Image (tube, rainbow, N blue to C red; front, side, top):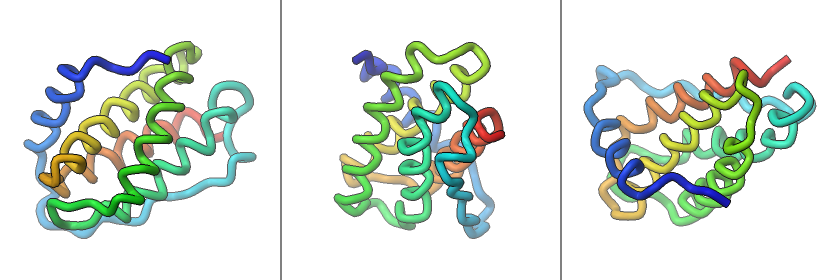
Length: 135
């Protein structure tokens, strides 16, 4: 298993906070069935991709994130990072981006300094994976 170095994750966490959602409410992310994912890497990764999507709306609007959300993100990220390492070129950039963003979210959530602005980036990267992995 190969995870991204902590320094990379820390940089993502720091730079991920600079965006602004303009105070808009977050939209619920789509949660497709595993069968909707293309065969191969995407189908194998589908449960973890969807597990990450399920957590987007559960992150909340404050600095503290529920422990169950943190556990779900950690477990899905670990498995997805392993798959992303050997993913086909068509899927690798989107999977890598999602893994890195989840890492930034986790760093901030684990430190009880979560910034809800990160949810916007997480949703964007999640949708990026759906764009390349859904049939």
